[in-house]
Length: 468
Ligand code: AMP
Ligand code: SF4
Image (tube, rainbow, N blue to C red; front, side):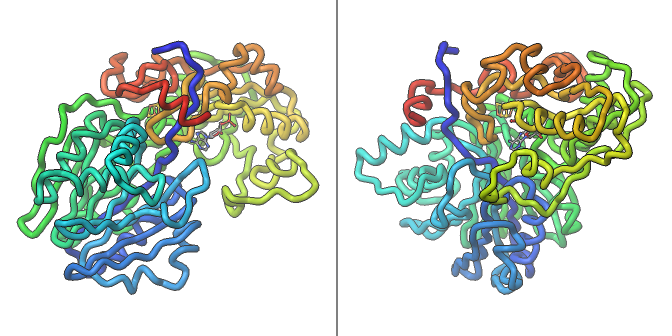
């Protein structure tokens, strides 16, 4: 990897849901998006198709905000796709997915989870040829490639487009008479196939199937395109598989009740991460606490392995959204107290282990350690159930520039002192692999934000220039 300080250029990790041939398609997508809400809170949208007529309802905010009048129930059509967006930037309403495009062979709606690493180059080359773009979204690039393909048939045109793009894409394409799901050859993001009442559906995570009582069939494979239409289901190869599934989905992003690529729940894997962390970095303590919600499973595993009681010492206020606006009188302590509070009676006078799933800028750990000290803990040992995040992510998870990552500037001892902990330890990369895979073989996992080994080519110069 070139020795450059990178800033991540691509911004979205989202949730997608689609269903083909169901009388209540819009309604089921609405419920599916509810289950995927943790994957994106910036915007939500559904597009349904009824005998060639596409209807869209979308907006900024949570699924409940966007569909507050039961609008999803009125979307007529037997097939629909939906999307929830997580973005680090300020997406505009024109960028809210799914996006609908009309081209010479018909109309299509696209919903994408991931980030392309060569979108900027393709965009520039298309612009030089006269293309006009309305949004900054990667899927507009894909739509242009489909429209410019020499093939009239959608499946062939899509295969042509996917042959040009690189990066992560769990992509749903809805046409009048088919629903197509595509996964990049690395299979960086999850995409599962299910069936409800005889209709096939796709979701970023299996927790969406549980909500609508769909049967889980399997995960879409890296480099696979699944086409669902009147003539049932077809599987096509779109690229040479070279699996590199995002390990951060296990660590933080996915919901604990989802199964990602295997039959094991995310909760079970996180528990193993906690056990592995305990084996690598034990400590004597009275209690183990997890930072709610994403670290609770790892904290349970850590506590179990060392036979230390797991306690609910931190409580989350789940009604403070990501878009919470700071008051005039700036108070960082109050900001964190709005989101998290300490059960003083549980922690007072105790030596506690605080388990968090990751440490990126160090802000969260620093604030929670301060809260715990204010509540009278005797000592606080911080244990992180992932290795130090040392590199940015270009595949759609909001892990920032080298500059913003605390390990770029500080040693572990310096971070410990910065966050004010009595001790600080991270899970090792080998331990992460062992907990996820059950072996030391890291084949098939992306670990790039920990070890800098990116599973696709990255044009570092362009990524850097893009963010200046
Ligand atoms: P930091 O405060 O920058 O050290 O970030 C670590 C905290 O952010 C942990 O508590 C994680 O649970 C949380 N976290 C990890 N990944 C993400 C992400 N992609 N978006 C938002 N929060 C995250
Ligand atoms: Fe996931 Fe990290 Fe790879 Fe990004 S770089 S896909 S966050 S493992």
